[in-house]
Each structure stands twice: as C-alpha cells, then as structure tokens.
Amino acid sequence: MQLETLGPGGGYHTRLLRPPDLRSLQALFERATDYFEVATGQPPAADEAARAYVAGPPSKQVTDKRTIGIFTGNDALVGVLDALTDWPDAGTWTMGMLLLDPAHRGKGLGRASLTAYEAWAHSQGATRFHTAIVAHHEPGIRFITLAGYEQLRRVDPPPGSASAIVFFEKKEAS
Image (cartoon, helix red, strand yellow):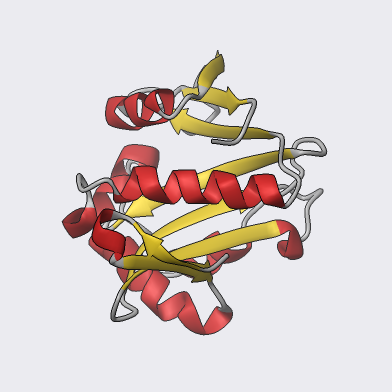
C-alpha cells in the first residue's frame, strides 16, 4: 500500500512496514503511550513493536498481516494501522489498531488513513471490515461509528482485563 497523497494537504504517505522499521515503530508507541494505557492499562512494553508486528491468531500466518506505516513527507513514522486479511472468514479484513502520534491527531489523518486502507483492502478482495475497541474508549468508538461501522456485540472483560470489548463491522468499503 503506497499512497503519496494522504491526509491534510496530502502531506502524508503510507507503505507496508518491514523489520527495519521496528525501531521507529517502537518510538511511535512510546510517544503514544496513552493508546496503550487506554487499551491495556499499561504503557507499551519494551518489545511492543516486535510483538505487534507479528501478533495475530494462531490460525493466521505473519504473511496474512498488513502493518501499514503512516509517514510524513520527510519519512517520519507518525502512525500505524494493522490488519489481518481474510479473518475471521474470507473477505473480512480485521483491523487490530489505528494509532497516531498525538502531535498528528485531530487533523483528519485518522479518517484519511482509514478510508485509504478500506479502499486498498477492497481492491484486494475485502468485502467486510471488523475491529474491536475497549468499551471505555469513547473517542475511538465515536470515530469508528462515524466511519460507518456498526456494533456487532459487546463482550465482558476477559480474565485478567478490566475492560469489556466492543466488536464492530462495516459491510462495504468506502
């Protein structure tokens, strides 16, 4: 996925992340500690980027994961969107995270990134989109709902977690 004109004023671009990008991804996670504190109650682990790069259900391969970096014009990593293809079933792409550097939030970059991701995924065969958000993350729920996602279900907190999870689906790409 490579888009030269993304976000406000076309000042951003995307590409799939590669192992050499893990140091920049870890630095992004450390700048966006609030994301992890909302999602897990803790700051990112020292190896969070390496784990995020390969994380997924046991039934999927690392090659089924799309970790998309969002970069400024001078190639600084300021965001990440990760997704699994064809999970939980064929044609469904499941987004695990959309995270932006706090300095780049509130400018339309999240919306532009999500829209570009959905269009690209649709061109690759996606017909539905899933995601999950912790129930107490009201800004995230508002964002995904405004993007056309509908709530599927709410699941009580899993053991060891304090947060319920809300699952969402969008049936057609933007």
